[in-house]
Every structure is written in C-alpha cells, then in structure tokens.
Length: 175
Image (cartoon, rainbow, N blue to C red):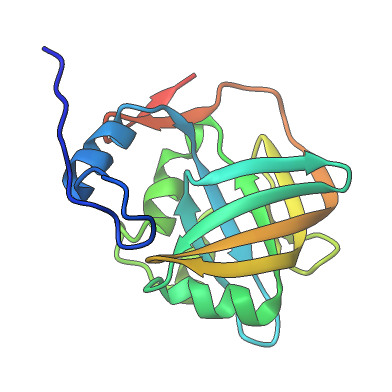
C-alpha cells in the first residue's frame, strides 16, 4: 500500500516537509554502503559507523560525510581536521557494530577490534576495508542536527575485492 503524508511547513523554507519518523522510515528502505570513519591527531583518536558518505567531485577528489552534532566523535574529527573513510566488507559486521556503539566499547577501546595502520593524515585506516579514503577537511558546516563535512582526499588505499557490507531495512546485508 502506498503511504504519503502532508507535513507542516519547514522553518527554513516555509515549504511542507515530512515528519522525522516518516523520513527515517523512508531512508531505512534505501541501501547504503557501511563505513567506519576515523580520525586521529591532537584532539585524540575517534571513530564512528556511517552510511551518510557520498562522493562530491573527482577533481579535486573529495567526499562528503554527515555526523550528528551530538556524537562523541564530532569534536575530535573537527579539531583534528583529518579523517579516513573505511568502506566495510561483508565480513566486517562486528566492526560496524563496535563503531556504532552497540558493543559497549568506547573511544580508544574500539580500535582493539580490527587491524589498523596510519595513512598520510595519521587517521587510522582499516587493513581489511574494501577501500580507505584518507582526507583533510576542506569545508564543514552545521545543517540542523548534523555536521556536513567535505574532505579532500589525499590518499586512497585499495583493499581486497570482496562482497560489500550494506545497511537497508535496519539490518546489514552482503552485496
């Protein structure tokens, strides 16, 4: 059955917008690659699981990452001004859960799971990832509840070609 909903006007534009619950339900039906985004530097080492990652341009090569402003990792990433996007393989479900906060590990403890090395920026790169994009922040701004961060890629590490981990319907799947 097709479900639609009229919503009250948005504060920013005055145009109607969907309720947050309906938006989240709609987005749960979109399959996205699963990534662990990491940072390290003067503000400390941190990381989080993300699906809100997308390419921006190939010249200069850059990625966009979205991160909730309430996240513990947000301040470290913004202060360090560097991050690494590690795209997970289907066999990395445990790691996705660890960095999503579902395993009870916090901060530095999260990096006891997986094999890590540092790339050019010093951000941790996951050795089993499909690909790691090592980035320097070129732009960052707050949009409602999230930081929207654009990183210029300074190094790419290609991993083994194997099935990817995706998130859809509030569950992990192999692709």
